Length: 466
Image (tube, rainbow, N blue to C red; front, side, top):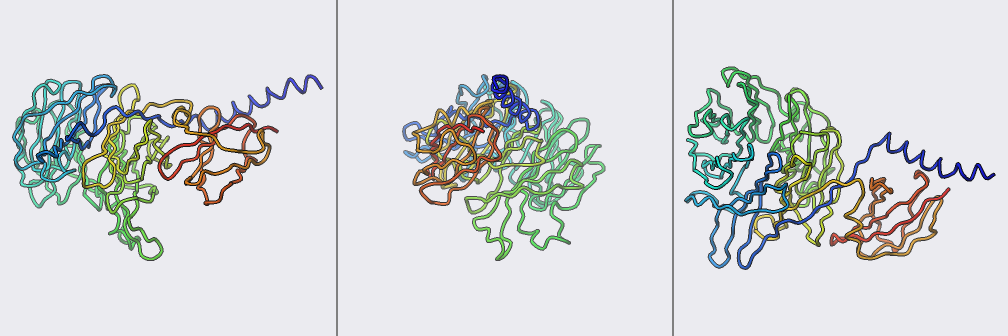
């Protein structure tokens, strides 16, 4: 009898060890707001983020309501997003920043000193000294430069959707831009791999064009969504892509109306992946959007198995732990009461800190924009820090079920084990109590976290005993 009592805790720890070994720890990042959106009458509209090592850059539009005036600016961090310094390029851009949210179409921190930014009227800004000085580079196109990418500090590509001269190349850091010997309509994204390899992707339809010899010859793929078998293919818009090493690409954007069966107003976000350069695409991940248009807008680089994407999913992000093969929706738990509507930029530092630009609704008006730094943890520390109360639950310890009194404005709850792994998520039906099924859980200590419709988190702990 005594020996069996001694073995009981051992069995519990062994079961927990087996769960860890099989499933792995998939913790949430905890988010810390590192820059707010307003100082006096001046507000910042943050969008686009990029990191090289622990050096990061974020683009911003400065909106002075006493003016009102619109001014481009950069925010630079050299400590993985802990602190930020504002840099203004002091360049006259009379045709740029004509509409809020359209200032910087893309920003890249190439290395610790070199960065580049594309603007909404063909002007490219470039720094060679860590942002101390910015120069204006003119790309000879009448169209908006929608994307730009450098494989090193000298070799780059820029694209501008239009009818001619849509692809531009540079081999001297952007001092001179040359029209590529290939043209394609309506491009939305580009990537330079080095050694003559480039890729561009079509807006909406997502055809991928690949060259290995600086566009002397080009291979192309079919559309992401096959028009011969998908009668709603025209409602699926590929807005942007993230390029990984080799032939892995994430495409994402807006999944529109599909008739009476799926009333998708305001719409859906989607993410889809290819591992062979666009020849074949996997099963799309689709999630309800909270705004009219936009869909998925950005993701972290494909440099590790963990990838985070964002879009018009209210105060939530999309998380993948297998390099974009599968996804799950997860609440972004900030250390303030700020609720964002749109993710405007995502990047990752060399020490795995996540840099994010979040924007509140309404989309087309500046304000309530923040820069946040996310840090991964093996425990769900954010939920503990943001807990604002407790609530009744019985029995505790529990065996098969536990009954919990539900906060009046709760919309969902999540269960976390002692290591901070989410083990389940359920929506709340609106009743005053809910019964949680514990039959599939191993013995141990768990946290239950209710999320209210205002983004507040209410947490408590209970014990599962057998």
